[in-house]
Length: 281
Image 1 (cartoon, rainbow, N blue to C red):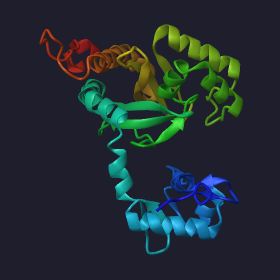
Image 2 (cartoon, one colour; image 1 turned 30 degrees about the vertical axis):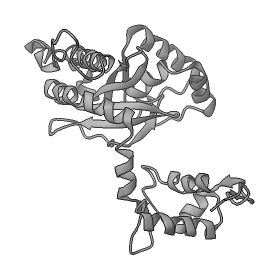
Image 3 (cartoon, rainbow, N blue to C red; image 1 turned 180 degrees about the horizontal axis):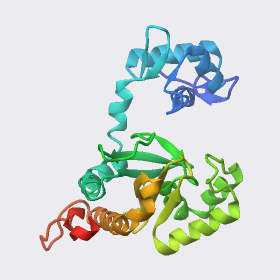
């Protein structure tokens, strides 16, 4: 069957069929995990008949799930497809052992994040009973200017993205959030020079983080790794946390650089974080 370009476009909104489908899917977020038809219509700006047709088809395909009360949620089929995305999957496969080592060494929340548009996307998290409670989970997105991982990703991002973040306005999440563009740019410069970002109570009161970059095969920064702890104990623990964090990031970067395989010398993977001296654990 031949489909003309005219048939593929919504003449009113000027959108292709695929763009309208993704508009419906993009309406869901961490803040909006469950939406009714009226909500989908409001968020997408599409006619209610169009949204209803697309949502019904997505439910039939398993991309969306419809609850008994008429609420729509992301379906399991999308989760399965998303897990096949090569970059985060490879990054997680390589990083996870070191994330667990880092948790054993610190007892704190361990976050792995990548740049996704103008936000930090959390692709892995390791925590335990000793960790401070934080409102993050895999798939969560957080602002770049108010988180440790975000500051690392923004510091090494193209200048155009940095300017776009500044132009969009820096939202104040707590009294400690950096919202002055000049101060943020100086902070990012310091992150580039030192290779580490420190963030205290800028997103959530009572918590603080320290983050470092992870480099890919071409030495580009592809992710950020952080340790999040209680702010009251953060300064006292930095002396032991930072060496462990840097070692974990170097180890992950080294494995990514050599393609997640032993090198020709057969030396095996780099030392784990738990090989640190006791004083650093």
